[in-house]
Length: 317
Length: 102
Image 1 (spheres, rainbow over the protein chains, first blue to last red):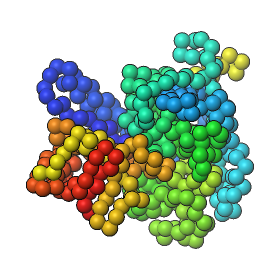
Image 2 (image 1 turned 45 degrees about the vertical axis):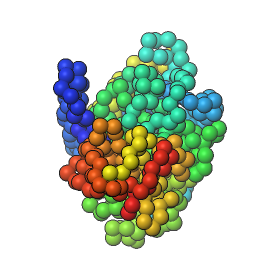
Image 3 (image 1 turned 90 degrees about the vertical axis):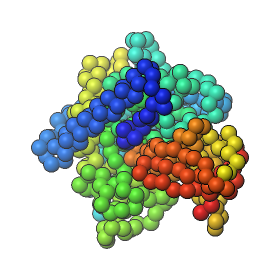
Image 4 (image 1 turned 30 degrees about the vertical axis):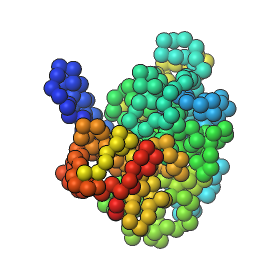
């Protein structure tokens, strides 16, 4: 995300718009500085200069903000719990379909040692189900973050240093979901998932009804890039991960192994990686190299989650 | 100058599936597109001459490039986004579809 490009020049000079403009420019500069520091730390982990030191499995408290324009979009508790169950398989490499990873890459399958649980305490210290719900008049939302603000028809974020915010709403333009990388503003931190790509039941619709859209977006939230790099279909882009093969663009649908691009034969693209663009049934692994980036993320910009978890016992979490 | 009605002032998403040999078809956000992890290219006309082009970005959200639009002769609209300028020929538009000559 290049937030500098998202700054709208003020149409007319005036105190208010000038202030907003300045604030956005400053935030953009902060974002660039944050991103540079985050990538430097990821590089230190990738080269072995820094070592992962996390002993415990991290449990991340989740708040699901359901922002619905229709009763159907007001997804059920069952649909939410089904999604969290998928995350707890995918981020522990406990998913049944991990056996479908081609033998040549079985040794790369990584357990992220991260689990997810609906928050039980809200930001004010009160008991919560970890779900907020509101009716909206917006027929759909775009990727402009309106869904993340009560004043714009959505729901305000909970503190990003203690919770993973997941917004579930109807996204327009056919978009399944989007994320914010670490280092961005707390008020918009988290992932947004369209209701038809969320969980495994209810409004979830094939071929995106196995909960993998949320797995993919949380991958971004933990600082993972697309494994094809983000250079269109070129071969020079990178995900800054050593053990994912270089590949051209993203893959779609359910490719057959091997699918060779960018001279990456004989094994070809790792299209079954969660950070590709394949259908839910066709993606089922993270790699050890990707987990080094996740560990760097947890040691750096998202260390608040580790601190919060250490200060909370499972009983009162 | 093309007849620009307020219907034009929205974000239009490319509906590749509906393209014809000589027309690129765009639809509003609420059109029932097949879902995709990749954001569709889109463009947005704003009243007063603002224009935004959106391309696929790194965290599955589109990256906007801001610019301007101005009407020219017949069906032509000159758009500027980033460093580029091009002329779009708007064949037809209402609140449901935007057709641009390829």
